[in-house]
Image (tube, rainbow, N blue to C red; front, top):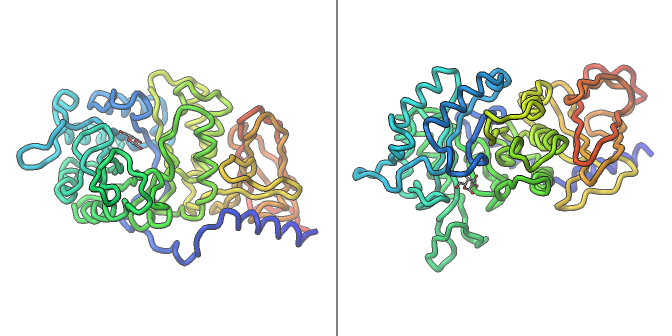
Length: 415
Ligand code: GLA
């Protein structure tokens, strides 16, 4: 029986295992992103609308007044549409003067004086996705500009790159033989030489199996198409992340995309699961909603100390699926209810009512890294604590519970 259980657990991990461990050792060493980035990005709150100095400063103030800075959210990132339509006569990027009347640096300075960090967005191709100047051919110049402006974080998108043999440069390229990788290498090297540590956020939507090389190139890498403001999108991105968990580690993480909580497409249960899944998958947590209109329930989810501590655990290992004895196997593309992963001081176990209301239970004997016996646990959303051989919860559709199970507190073992 014990052997059968172990076999099931091994099978569950084999299901999601994609690469030899030796491939996972090398990482971009710029000292940044040792834990997933926490902060804000304006894109999910109205696209181009808020790519302005005023908005960045409002966000910075609200991160502080709402207690989000104290909870760990420090990056204030502006996405696409912050720049002018063309470069200046010397080829430099220019902020749109109506959106950034003082330019970028004074805004970055002010945000720094508030104890926060400032991020900007650009593109590896000839234009950004919204049609502003891209960095292709200007990588060194742009990296130096960012360093001059004291930018801390650079998101590098993948629109308008060469596609296929035809010479086409479309907004999005789906030719499997056209690799984005070399373009990210050029920008990585340019940033490394620019004289300022700048977090390098790769955004190629999971092209070229970016998780297999992203760790040598950037501090995080988007592994999917853009998140949409609905549960189906959240569930499908999380399901995909489970299969590539092993690539996450200090210095480089799978980026499941910016959060949609607060934007009205998810109910409270789904918001819990969205942040819970992103947290245990060790994704960056970048808030993407109007902070001035945040409901208390959303704010409490975002500020959940236990959850953030799990996301920011120094071990940096992402949780993935495990298959409890008697449960059916995960199905590719569908969100599975059972998750677990190692922490520096324990194991995280996540259960999510992925298909509808469910009574879900987990026996610790089935959890990789735990085993038979009695263990102490605490649950992040309810604050419940206990000890025993497992946990169970009656969950409404799409709700989640995240348990930290403490290894050091094994009460007794039958092993
Ligand atoms: C792409 C990215 C998004 C966002 C937009 C901006 O779609 O994946 O995250 O940055 O471009 O145009």
